[in-house]
Length: 184
Image (cartoon, rainbow, N blue to C red):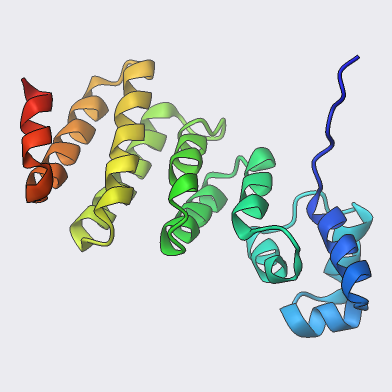
C-alpha cells in the first residue's frame, strides 16, 4: 500500500496559522478584511473552495509561499473567469513558474469549448503583447496556445500563436539568430 500525502486545504492552513500565531477569528478578520463567518466556514471545511480574492487576502498569514498556495488552489479550480483572474495575478506578481500551468488549466477547462478557450487566451496574450508588458510571459502563453491547438487539431490557433511568437522574438535582437535558426 502506497503512502498518500494529503494536501493541506485552505481551511487547514488557516487553522494552522491561527494556532501558530495565537490569532482569534476577530484578529484574522481585522488583518485580512475577511469576515468571521467566512473564516469559520473555511476552517471548518463547510466552504471547500473559497473565492480566489479570499484566498489572496488570507495568503500573507500562511506559512507556505504564495506560489504554493496558488498551486494548491489551482488543483480544484475549473471556473474560467477565476482562472483568468489567477493568470493576471501570476503575471502581475511575476510568478513565471505558474504562467504555463494556469494557461493550460484555462484551455483544459471543461466549462468552455476548445475554440472559445483558445480564442480567449489568445486575445489575452495578444493584449499583453500589445501593451509590451512582458515578452517572456507572452512567449510562454503563445507556446502553450500553439501546443494545445496542435493537440486539439486547431490549425488556425497554431498559426496565429506561432506568428505572434516569431514577431516577439524578431523584435528582440539578441534572439534574432535563434529565431532564424529555428525557421530553417
